[in-house]
Length: 217
Image (cartoon, rainbow, N blue to C red; front, top):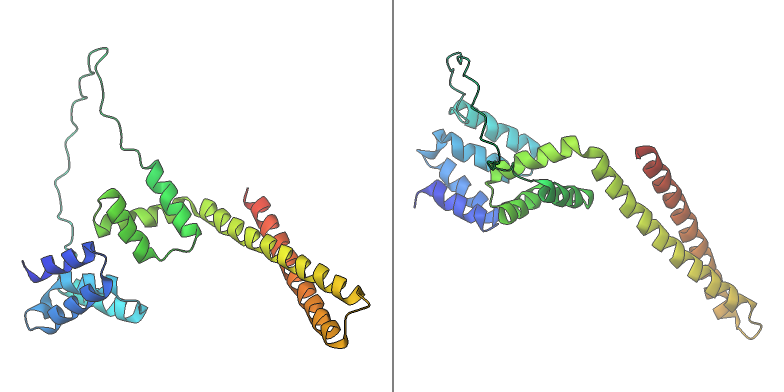
Protein backbone atom coordinates (compact mmCIF):
# COMPACT_ATOMS: atom_id res chain seq x y z
CA UNK A 1 0.00 0.00 0.00
CA UNK A 2 1.39 3.42 -0.99
CA UNK A 3 1.76 6.22 1.52
CA UNK A 4 -1.25 8.15 0.21
CA UNK A 5 -3.32 4.98 0.01
CA UNK A 6 -2.62 4.46 3.71
CA UNK A 7 -3.69 8.05 4.38
CA UNK A 8 -6.96 7.56 2.53
CA UNK A 9 -7.56 4.34 4.43
CA UNK A 10 -7.04 6.21 7.70
CA UNK A 11 -9.46 8.94 6.57
CA UNK A 12 -12.06 6.32 5.73
CA UNK A 13 -11.80 5.11 9.33
CA UNK A 14 -12.43 8.67 10.51
CA UNK A 15 -9.08 9.01 12.31
CA UNK A 16 -8.23 12.61 11.46
CA UNK A 17 -5.27 12.97 13.82
CA UNK A 18 -3.58 9.82 12.55
CA UNK A 19 -4.03 10.87 8.92
CA UNK A 20 -2.58 14.30 9.72
CA UNK A 21 0.51 12.69 11.28
CA UNK A 22 0.92 10.42 8.25
CA UNK A 23 0.75 13.39 5.90
CA UNK A 24 3.26 15.39 7.94
CA UNK A 25 5.71 12.49 7.71
CA UNK A 26 5.16 12.31 3.94
CA UNK A 27 5.73 16.00 3.22
CA UNK A 28 8.80 16.06 5.45
CA UNK A 29 10.47 13.40 3.34
CA UNK A 30 12.60 14.56 0.36
CA UNK A 31 10.26 12.97 -2.16
CA UNK A 32 7.13 14.15 -0.37
CA UNK A 33 8.03 17.84 -0.48
CA UNK A 34 6.92 17.95 -4.11
CA UNK A 35 3.86 15.76 -3.56
CA UNK A 36 1.05 18.20 -4.29
CA UNK A 37 -1.70 15.78 -3.36
CA UNK A 38 -0.15 15.20 0.07
CA UNK A 39 0.08 18.95 0.68
CA UNK A 40 -3.55 19.38 -0.40
CA UNK A 41 -4.77 16.60 1.91
CA UNK A 42 -2.74 18.07 4.77
CA UNK A 43 -4.49 21.40 4.25
CA UNK A 44 -7.85 19.66 4.69
CA UNK A 45 -6.75 18.10 7.97
CA UNK A 46 -5.51 21.32 9.61
CA UNK A 47 -7.57 23.81 11.61
CA UNK A 48 -5.38 26.92 11.33
CA UNK A 49 -6.39 29.00 8.26
CA UNK A 50 -2.83 30.29 7.78
CA UNK A 51 -1.41 26.76 7.78
CA UNK A 52 -4.16 25.63 5.42
CA UNK A 53 -3.35 28.45 3.00
CA UNK A 54 0.37 27.60 3.12
CA UNK A 55 -0.31 23.93 2.38
CA UNK A 56 -2.62 24.81 -0.51
CA UNK A 57 0.02 27.14 -1.92
CA UNK A 58 2.59 24.34 -1.79
CA UNK A 59 0.11 21.97 -3.42
CA UNK A 60 -0.51 24.41 -6.26
CA UNK A 61 3.22 24.97 -6.68
CA UNK A 62 3.57 21.21 -7.09
CA UNK A 63 0.83 21.18 -9.71
CA UNK A 64 -2.05 19.90 -7.61
CA UNK A 65 -4.90 19.92 -8.28
CA UNK A 66 -4.04 19.60 -11.97
CA UNK A 67 -5.35 22.30 -14.25
CA UNK A 68 -8.21 21.20 -16.50
CA UNK A 69 -7.13 20.23 -19.96
CA UNK A 70 -8.23 22.36 -22.86
CA UNK A 71 -10.79 20.58 -24.94
CA UNK A 72 -11.72 21.08 -28.53
CA UNK A 73 -14.90 22.92 -29.32
CA UNK A 74 -17.62 20.36 -29.19
CA UNK A 75 -19.53 19.84 -32.40
CA UNK A 76 -23.30 19.86 -32.15
CA UNK A 77 -24.61 16.38 -31.64
CA UNK A 78 -27.72 15.11 -33.33
CA UNK A 79 -30.80 14.98 -31.16
CA UNK A 80 -31.21 11.58 -29.51
CA UNK A 81 -33.94 9.38 -30.78
CA UNK A 82 -37.02 9.36 -28.61
CA UNK A 83 -37.63 6.10 -26.76
CA UNK A 84 -40.53 4.02 -27.93
CA UNK A 85 -43.83 4.52 -26.12
CA UNK A 86 -43.93 2.74 -22.79
CA UNK A 87 -40.17 2.42 -22.53
CA UNK A 88 -38.77 3.06 -19.07
CA UNK A 89 -36.22 5.73 -18.25
CA UNK A 90 -33.39 5.85 -15.73
CA UNK A 91 -34.53 7.95 -12.76
CA UNK A 92 -32.37 10.86 -11.64
CA UNK A 93 -30.60 10.33 -8.32
CA UNK A 94 -32.61 11.54 -5.35
CA UNK A 95 -30.53 13.58 -2.89
CA UNK A 96 -33.45 14.84 -0.81
CA UNK A 97 -32.60 12.61 2.16
CA UNK A 98 -28.94 13.67 2.07
CA UNK A 99 -29.95 17.34 1.83
CA UNK A 100 -32.25 16.99 4.84
CA UNK A 101 -29.48 15.24 6.77
CA UNK A 102 -26.95 18.00 6.04
CA UNK A 103 -29.44 20.80 6.78
CA UNK A 104 -30.25 19.28 10.16
CA UNK A 105 -26.61 18.74 11.10
CA UNK A 106 -25.54 22.23 10.01
CA UNK A 107 -28.48 23.67 11.92
CA UNK A 108 -27.17 21.84 14.98
CA UNK A 109 -23.69 23.39 14.43
CA UNK A 110 -22.02 20.07 13.60
CA UNK A 111 -18.36 20.38 12.60
CA UNK A 112 -17.93 20.34 8.81
CA UNK A 113 -15.18 17.72 8.92
CA UNK A 114 -17.29 15.41 11.08
CA UNK A 115 -20.26 16.03 8.80
CA UNK A 116 -18.18 15.13 5.74
CA UNK A 117 -17.09 11.92 7.44
CA UNK A 118 -20.72 11.13 8.26
CA UNK A 119 -21.71 11.69 4.63
CA UNK A 120 -18.88 9.43 3.46
CA UNK A 121 -20.18 6.65 5.69
CA UNK A 122 -23.84 7.33 4.88
CA UNK A 123 -23.67 7.80 1.11
CA UNK A 124 -20.41 6.06 0.22
CA UNK A 125 -18.94 9.26 -1.23
CA UNK A 126 -15.35 10.43 -1.32
CA UNK A 127 -14.23 13.20 1.02
CA UNK A 128 -14.10 15.71 -1.84
CA UNK A 129 -17.65 14.84 -2.94
CA UNK A 130 -18.94 15.18 0.62
CA UNK A 131 -17.25 18.59 1.01
CA UNK A 132 -18.70 19.79 -2.28
CA UNK A 133 -22.17 18.62 -1.30
CA UNK A 134 -21.93 20.45 2.04
CA UNK A 135 -20.92 23.63 0.21
CA UNK A 136 -23.88 23.22 -2.13
CA UNK A 137 -26.37 22.75 0.71
CA UNK A 138 -24.86 25.65 2.69
CA UNK A 139 -25.25 27.99 -0.29
CA UNK A 140 -28.73 26.92 -1.39
CA UNK A 141 -30.44 26.13 1.92
CA UNK A 142 -29.01 28.87 4.14
CA UNK A 143 -32.44 30.07 5.27
CA UNK A 144 -33.57 26.58 6.22
CA UNK A 145 -30.38 26.00 8.21
CA UNK A 146 -30.74 29.34 9.99
CA UNK A 147 -34.40 28.63 10.76
CA UNK A 148 -33.49 25.30 12.35
CA UNK A 149 -30.77 26.98 14.39
CA UNK A 150 -33.18 29.67 15.57
CA UNK A 151 -35.77 27.04 16.40
CA UNK A 152 -33.23 25.36 18.66
CA UNK A 153 -32.52 28.69 20.37
CA UNK A 154 -36.24 29.25 20.84
CA UNK A 155 -36.71 25.84 22.46
CA UNK A 156 -33.78 26.43 24.81
CA UNK A 157 -35.22 29.83 25.75
CA UNK A 158 -38.58 28.24 26.54
CA UNK A 159 -36.89 25.69 28.80
CA UNK A 160 -35.00 28.51 30.52
CA UNK A 161 -38.27 30.37 31.04
CA UNK A 162 -39.82 27.32 32.67
CA UNK A 163 -36.84 26.88 35.00
CA UNK A 164 -36.90 30.57 35.91
CA UNK A 165 -40.61 30.50 36.69
CA UNK A 166 -40.22 27.40 38.85
CA UNK A 167 -37.42 29.05 40.83
CA UNK A 168 -39.45 32.22 41.24
CA UNK A 169 -42.61 30.44 42.37
CA UNK A 170 -40.80 28.17 44.83
CA UNK A 171 -38.96 31.12 46.36
CA UNK A 172 -42.20 33.12 46.72
CA UNK A 173 -43.82 30.21 48.55
CA UNK A 174 -40.83 29.94 50.87
CA UNK A 175 -40.72 33.67 51.61
CA UNK A 176 -44.46 33.81 52.29
CA UNK A 177 -44.22 30.99 54.82
CA UNK A 178 -44.15 32.64 58.26
CA UNK A 179 -42.42 29.62 59.76
CA UNK A 180 -39.36 30.00 57.55
CA UNK A 181 -36.27 31.11 59.47
CA UNK A 182 -33.92 33.90 58.42
CA UNK A 183 -31.39 31.72 56.59
CA UNK A 184 -34.07 30.09 54.47
CA UNK A 185 -35.55 33.50 53.77
CA UNK A 186 -32.20 34.70 52.44
CA UNK A 187 -31.79 31.58 50.30
CA UNK A 188 -35.31 31.99 48.97
CA UNK A 189 -34.59 35.62 48.12
CA UNK A 190 -31.49 34.59 46.18
CA UNK A 191 -33.52 31.97 44.30
CA UNK A 192 -36.16 34.59 43.59
CA UNK A 193 -33.61 36.98 42.08
CA UNK A 194 -32.03 34.16 40.07
CA UNK A 195 -35.43 33.05 38.82
CA UNK A 196 -36.32 36.57 37.72
CA UNK A 197 -32.97 36.93 35.91
CA UNK A 198 -33.29 33.56 34.16
CA UNK A 199 -36.89 34.27 33.18
CA UNK A 200 -36.00 37.68 31.80
CA UNK A 201 -33.13 36.31 29.72
CA UNK A 202 -35.29 33.47 28.47
CA UNK A 203 -38.11 35.80 27.46
CA UNK A 204 -35.65 38.02 25.60
CA UNK A 205 -34.17 35.05 23.74
CA UNK A 206 -37.61 33.66 23.03
CA UNK A 207 -38.85 36.93 21.55
CA UNK A 208 -35.74 37.32 19.40
CA UNK A 209 -36.00 33.75 18.15
CA UNK A 210 -39.68 34.03 17.30
CA UNK A 211 -39.16 37.38 15.57
CA UNK A 212 -36.27 36.02 13.51
CA UNK A 213 -38.25 32.95 12.53
CA UNK A 214 -41.19 35.10 11.43
CA UNK A 215 -38.92 37.30 9.30
CA UNK A 216 -37.21 34.33 7.65
CA UNK A 217 -40.51 32.70 6.79
